[in-house]
Image 1: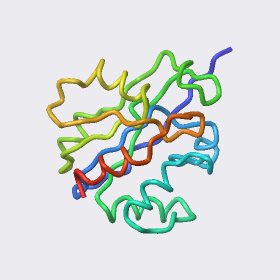
Image 2: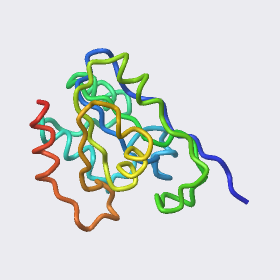
Image 3: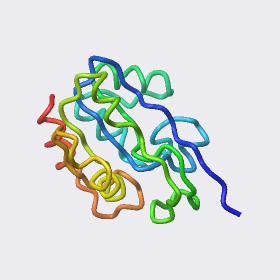
Image 4: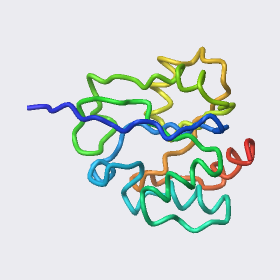
Length: 158
């Protein structure tokens, strides 16, 4: 029997300039109740290395790091049925209210973390008016991850 899983609310304030959208939290992220909880996921290492900072050890420090640098973080899917952490199994989903988030912030660029986030974003928000880019997923399952493209995209904003 399928069970509806819920994601997290956005990390964002009015000073955020960049929005990074993932697909949906992994099992490990749901266990710790925060984004990119799998220590094998490259997200925190890449973002922190861009700013020459160590990866914060705790959730509140990670949240503070994001806001310090003007980075908003959310997932395109806020609720869905999913098997484990497999994006390919996401069904019966609800999308995040991206338009409201953009109206209440200074976000001027969006990074979509992986193909699933990009595909859903394109279907529901391609007319949003804010520039966006699809980057290779930071997931440990992605063997074609390209850290350079992440640094290049971050450099467009910072």
